[in-house]
Each structure stands twice: as C-alpha cells, then as structure tokens.
Image (tube, rainbow over all chains, first blue to last red; front, top):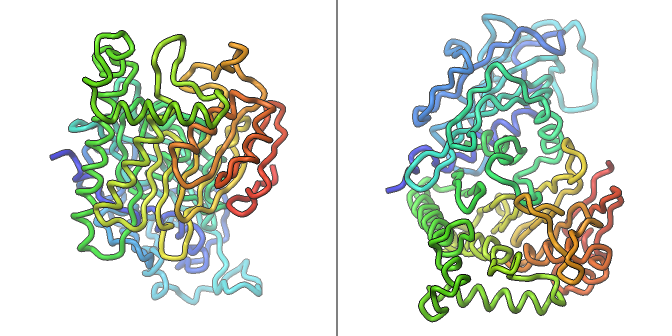
Length: 219
Length: 253
C-alpha cells in the first residue's frame, strides 16, 4: 500500500489553527499587556507519523497541548500545538481548555467593549504546523512545514521552515526567512480560505504557496 | 489531507467527514485517486518519451493501440477546440500535447473516485485548479481564494463554491507562454483568467483559451452558459462576467 499513514484526513487540526486565530483572544487564559513580539516559545507538533524530525524548532513539551476543535470534521490524532508565550510558565491554552483556565487577573488595558469578548488581551503565540508529507507514489517527495506567529489571535508572521527542493529532498529553512508568505497568509486568513486557485504552479512554487500553508495547517 | 506530487505539480486532497468510520473508506478513495493520477501521468505525460501520448505523437503507436482514455481525451480536445473557436489547441510546437485538457480531466475524475468511495465533502486542488464537492460542511460552501497574478501578497478575489470547479490560467503555463494560435505570438493582454463552472475539464480549458484570446475573452466568456469568469489584465485592471457576483467577490485591492 501507498504511504497514507502520514496523510490521514486531519482537517481538524487545520481548522483548529485557522479558527483558533479568531477565538483565542477571547479565551486567553492570562491577559498580557504586551503586543508584538514577546520571546515566543515555539513548539513542534506532536505528530508521531512525521517522517522527518523538525530540527528547526525546539520542543516545548511542558507548555504545549494538542489543540482540539469543535468542528464537525473528524477527530485527528495529529494536531498543531499551540503555545502561549506570555512567559516561561505560561498557562496551557487551547480553544476548549482555556474556558476553565481563565483567571480573574486584573487587566491593566481592559476596556469595556460591546463585543462578546470577555477578556481582551494581547498575546503572542507561535504555532508550528504539522509536517505535510508530499508523497510521490510509494516514496516521500518531501515535506512542507510552516510556522505561524499569532498576535491577539491574528497571524502576524508566517514562515516556511521546511519545503521540498527540486530533487525532493526537504530543505531545512530554520536559518532562513521567507517573509513573503506572511502577507499572503494574512489575506487568506481574513477570508477564511480553504484553498487557493492560481495559474498553474510547479511543485517548487507550491512549497512557497498559500496552499502549502493551508495544507500545513490542516495536516 | 493528502498531498501528492504528480503530473509535474502538487495535488492536495482535502476530504472532510464527521464519522470516524468513514476514515478507512476515505483513505481508500484517496489511494484510488492517487493511483489514478499516476496512471494518467504514465499514459499522457509529454515529458516522458515512453508515454503513450509521446509515442502516438511520433507515430510509433496507433490510437487504437492506446488506452481508451487517450481517445476520450483527444475527443475532448476536439470538442473544446470547437467551443473556444479554435483558441484551445491540443498541439504545442507542432507536437501532440493534450496537456491542457488532461489535468482538468484527471483531477475531475479523481474527485469522482472520492465520491464513489462515499465522500460527500471534498476538494481536490491540482496545481491551482480545483474540483470541489459538497462544501466544507453541510451548508458551508468552500472558500476559494484567487491568487493575484501581479501581487504576490494578495488575493484578487474569493469564490464561494459548494459543488463545482475553479481554474485559473496565466500568461505563462509551466514556464512556457500561452500562444495565440492565430498570430503565433505570446498572449500578453491578460495576466490571469479564472473560470468557475461545474466541470474542471472546461473551466480549465476555457481559462487557458481565454488567455490566448486576450481582449476578446471577456465577450466570449460572457456567452459561455454555466460558466462565470474573473480576469486581471496585464495593466492590473480587472473585469468579470455579469454573473460572477453570484459565485465570487472581488477584493478591494
């Protein structure tokens, strides 16, 4: 059989990532007055089927929890890990867990708002999407992995940290920056995009496309 | 989610289901679809000298000796050629090259294989050409961004689609320019054309033909019943067919 182990239909995780961008701020466990880049702990997705270890990121197992989702999609064993970066002892956060984790900490920047946002706060998170395996029949063509930075639940940066080269070998991009992904992903996010139609792209172009970021978020 | 490298591009399968019991049949359906796409590549690739299409083009193989799929595709090419007033051509540089129909046809068939496996909500994106079924959930259409051909950081439009196909063509396909078959010159008037319709075979082929048509494309697409289109001209001006607002919205930028 072909390699489908790593390709289970993990749509939930992607929706978690995409939806949590919007829902997280309202449920942030701890209000933090900072915005922009706090020293963000990154976390790797706990994807046991991942064939390639993501050396690009440092695991933060103590502060990452698998996200879960209320979506009607299937539950998935693979999900993106979400890490709050409000401090080294940051509270665990996920769209569901944070409801009970909310604490009545005074909010220095809190203002009454008409929106149903009980705890306006500013947090920065780094989400490392699961590794997307690009298959080619029985063999692995390469992998794509995207890291997102979220501020107040909105993507503020997106970086491809791995993608397959022409020869199918994945390039570790941990020391490189591909900022051009960021604004594209921002556009896609604002429209809750499921997929992107574009003039025919090659497999090389795919690796740097919004579609790849979406796939990474869903894997 | 399954991502497959095949036919010189990357094909993403996004299959949604609610019942865990559907996981195994959905994976089997994806396996069938992937096997199918690789078979299409073996038979139709113009990049492989030993493919049936390459051998047919060199006269080493008769049509009757090829898979029945080859005759079907060549017939589709002929139909689409007539429908596009000859702007769609299944030859390139004098060689037989049905690629312009093969990709849409293959991805449409891959989507049908998923449906046969029981899928009611899925989207197959083959290098930017999309066949979608059932919306992302009951009552929720798929949201499909249209990449802006002139701005790397923007979407030019968003299409809401429950069942159907979206294809976008640009002035350069696989690195080679789209040629106006009547002038022999590269078509440069339109930066990209997106067509929305039921079947990916024609949405893809019509989008390619529209690029070749250039300025004439708007009026021609307006007359294509069942298809709507959105285009970005080389100078950045945008236009769409009169019914496009039913399926898509155009972004502000």
